[in-house]
Amino acid sequence: MIDELREEEIVNKVGGRFKLSTLIQKRLVALNGGHRPLIQTESTDKLRIVIQEIMQDKIYLDASNNLRVTGASTEAGGPPELDLANL
Image 1 (spheres, rainbow, N blue to C red):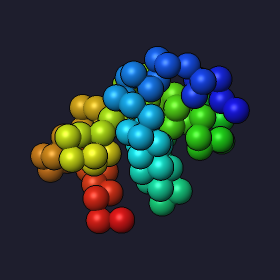
Image 2: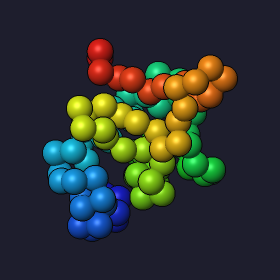
Image 3: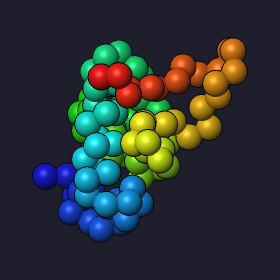
Image 4: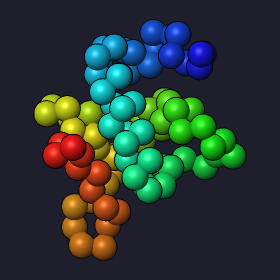
């Protein structure tokens, strides 16, 4: 098991175990769908990538439990929006 998942820090950062599970699942779907990691890593383990993205505050759940990328712009020319609400 990944050590970070045993710590309460990641659970508290996201707002609870249910939200953590939801965030991990939604981001894994995005990565498996072809989205690129938001962090620099040599790892190919997608779960470890997602955990590091959470720990580095790169992704979060909004009030409607939608996956959001920190600093993502909705203006033309910005990074694509990760809206997984219709999955």
